[in-house]
Length: 254
Image (cartoon, rainbow, N blue to C red; front, side, top):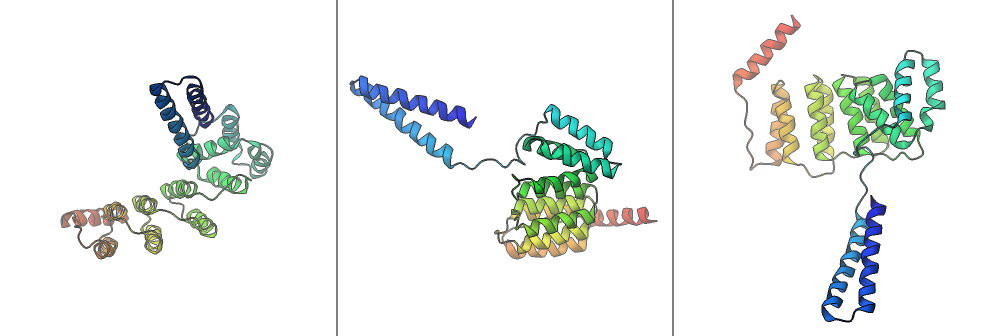
């Protein structure tokens, strides 16, 4: 896409220069100058715009990726053969295929295989620490209530000095809360509070909504929110909603 854009810009610039050289009428000269400056501006913008993270691009598997995914699922019960296949085939896949296979395993909640590919990706020569890579892994692990794996991934991202933005922090805390992991959610919340990024109100509201089943934790976050945003209002749910949730959780325990 970028090559096509640059090609079109180059053609527009060339036609503008030809007009400037061969047509001396005032209107034509003005039109040619406008085209020329527009093409130059377009080049500057396209060269300065950051590329989209590979973990945010649309992920489509090739035939080789599909074959590798099926074979990985078939061999996951055999550690020795699985390891050999990863070394001989998975490591040779295109970057886009490895990314796509990992995304598909995450979608299917294939925790074991996702962790295997997670290790493969981090050893690839093209790998660069990326917020979205870690976000997707943590969300998948939270959905499946995998605490130990979550801690491992969190340690890795801390070593690589990956920083989440405030919205990502809010989404992560919420998914851990929705998965019934309030302790892990609050650990991430504490990391969010220590983040160098300036706090935003929306992530707090996302977290507060997820904390409705946990009134005590919600009060703590609510106090932090009102301290940071004193001019804003927090709408509390009806008290009987807390009581209904507490009685429901007690009945489930019994």
